[in-house]
Length: 394
Ligand SMILES: [Zn+2]
Ligand SMILES: [Zn+2]
Image 1 (cartoon, rainbow, N blue to C red):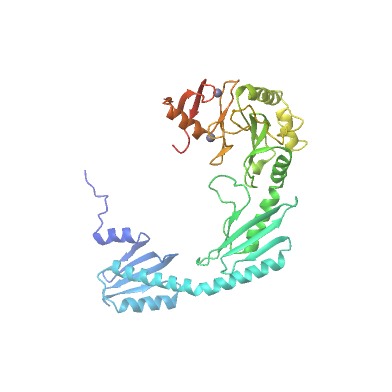
Image 2 (cartoon, rainbow, N blue to C red):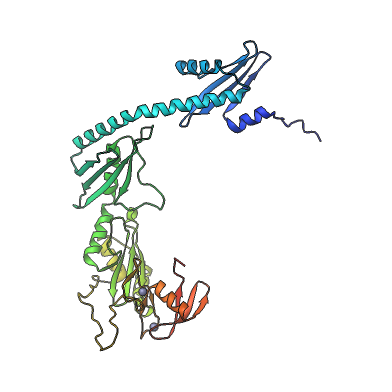
């Protein structure tokens, strides 16, 4: 078996491939060897041609299309002594990189001018702006607009003065929901007006979503988020003592059936689940003919959302602990690290609530039995069986 098909590389060719993968030997005769391809200058690939002439006994370098640069580099090479094409390319690359850096520095004054001009033009022509302010160091623009529902939306444009390319403006902060985790809604742009137009278009597109969330916030008792933001696409709504429903909508497809999840002990949740399944099963299913909010009420079998009484009745028996509804029965607070007390004792005559962390620590302290994904023991209140998942931080 021969290996005649195998091309044996010499050391120079190999090093060339490793260091300058875009440079190839394009001609080899007795008189001259020519290498051509691209060298990276820190920002762009620059076309380069290196010629070794055995008659002249030295290297010549050309940068096609740029005569002054070609002359500059060629003079640089002509005065040096090089042991091989790799050293020549190293020198060329170094020179190209220094030119690139010099151009960037020169551009900064131009970038400042561009920012000021862009800002002036933008504020002159965009009358639907609610507010707009350019930070003194020219690195940020704060702006806001008012939408069709009289809601104010603010955004922050960051300006990258160090970028040599044109897309120096980026929308880095805004009160809009994300489309999918990890994706950006807005690509950087070379002008402010373009970014603003995209932002305004997105705000307009999201009007039905903002309308729905406003309607929920005004007509329901929202338990979570504590202070809803425009970007929060869910609301956990109070339905009754110990029972709530979490509605999650897709902001970009508001008219699709929202995700509905009931929270509370089975005894209280089951009737709601049964109603929901009936509605979904009777063929009619989800409809938002009369608006998404109305559709949601129909889906839940409600005429309106029940409202939480203004004052929570507390058990005033002499030495009884005062636990308000929704409070954790270990730490007596409604929230721990922003989380609600979500574990509910399944014993219908107890139904005390606990934070996952509080109950877990309690059960660990009394040596309860660890199970596959949590811990299983007795309810601190009624001593009936209770299980608790492992808190996220453990
Ligand atoms: Zn707690
Ligand atoms: Zn219990």
